[in-house]
Length: 353
Image (cartoon, rainbow, N blue to C red; front, side, top):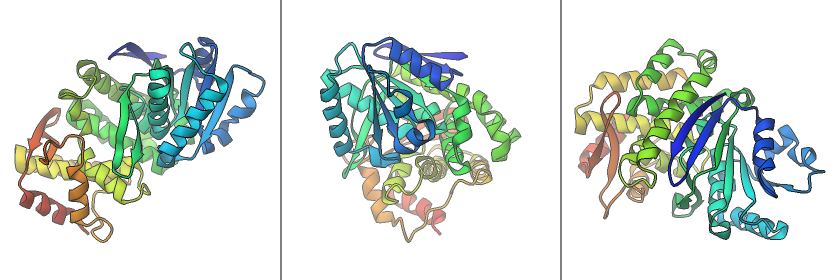
């Protein structure tokens, strides 16, 4: 087992290599009561309700899959369940699933009794390297993705890389977008690993190493800027356009698929605003394409006017001024504030199909 420390409003550990059954046992044993929040397809895979049927201290709440779980309606049903089982301040919540599950579990934990302990047991690559680490929790509303939430760090993050064997190639590839992001903003050695493993089969064989490197990137940034007042914004590289695309798709695109498109958009913008070498963008497109990730924008589904309006609602925007994260070079992120609208339109047209 490997461990990465994160210092935020609390100091906590990301355990890489703890088997999921042992992780659940560790979390539950430290408290009088526990509520496990798990999506329906994972419950079907691991039979948690049956596993804990005789354990009077542990309850299981099953949610819809993916972003459908991150609604105020689902959160409210969980709050009602927490009231029914009388979960108190000395008890805990466990999010067992992908990024949507840990976002939801963390938000519910932050809001119940003004904050109870929670644990993240990530089951997807995106969850392991991004969503479960950092203490940003939230749900979606009609206004946008994750605009309602709280900073509330997990007590422990558990990562069992063997769970990645349950992922389809599509879901694994989507998670790689967050890994690739870490390579561009902070750790170019990640990109070297990807160059040496250009196929999905090959990159699956080094998943553990990629997870550790990516978690270290996020832990370093979060430990310096927990509440996203400055530095932490670099973790949103590719997400300004990506979140807009994701929302316009009705969440039919995986988060990482939308981020992949956003990474290309941000890289082209970096060329225009930060003098990034175009060869960097070319290699990015090659890497993404090699893993089957999208790099183009379907203009019939995602018109520029709709993308632009959603980007203005991005959390990094200030007083109606768009702000993007770009890169000057590998591992050298920087801000792009108020880029000329004509530049953004030209990038969109370049990417449109």
